[in-house]
Amino acid sequence: MRLVVGVAASFASCLLACSSDDAASSPVRDAGGATISDGGAGDPGDAAGADPGHDASVHGGCDGKTYKLCDDFDTAAAGSTPTGWTILKGYGNTPPPTAVATDEFHSAPSSIKTSSDVSGASRILRALSGIGATAGTHWGRVFFKVRSPAPQLTKQGPHATFVALEGNLRAGELRVVDTQQATSGKIQLLANTPDDQCCTGTDFSYTIWDGAWHCSEWYVDHVTQSYRYFLDGAEVTKLAFNYGAGSTKANMPAAFTGVALGSIFYTPMLPSPLVTWFDDLAIDDAQIGCQ
Image 1 (cartoon, rainbow, N blue to C red):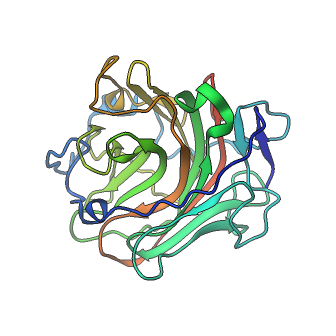
Image 2: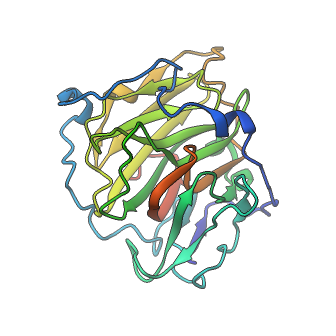
């Protein structure tokens, strides 16, 4: 693992179990709890110019970077939990793990991998106590890849969360890179909380579980209770929200306690594993981009 942290600090271990409410939440509901149907052709405005088939450029490692937090997982042993991270336990008797892998990567030689055919996989968690005020207002970036062909259910689902910020005041986490598959195989993008009381979602119009590397960027500001999302360098404006100071809808804390990485989904079973890789995670005060 090659790790850059802008402010030195010790990172406390944190094990947070997935709530039973989350495990039972319906995958056919959007972030606000309203039922969503397959968007079919979708809304061209969602993509904001993004190319769904674009393979994110093979850059993004942490060498020479001065971001507040950067991890490319490139010196950690395969099968391990990388240094500085802890296990964020999923649910079930033996939740599948999220760990370092060398079979795929965005920057060589390693990435983070989740492979699961049951719901409730464990993720990995990095505390954000060492980055000061950036923990509450920041830009984040991660590259992800879903093995193709991805499992495709005959009914709605799965709803798969890739990146979540822990410490949400009402619901435990704010899912800042969140996806859901329609029966057509098309993907919906979400900004979501486990209690379905917040926030936004697009139509099912994306082809990103396609075996290519994609770049997700998010922005959160606890002061204005706002969020923005970019896919492969283009903003998805339909996901943006700004609830205003004092709003409790998103319930962003002054500082999120950690960032959770890995694929966790909430449907009981898939016909074959949903396999996802993640690499080159970074958090900073300014937009990072997909380089």
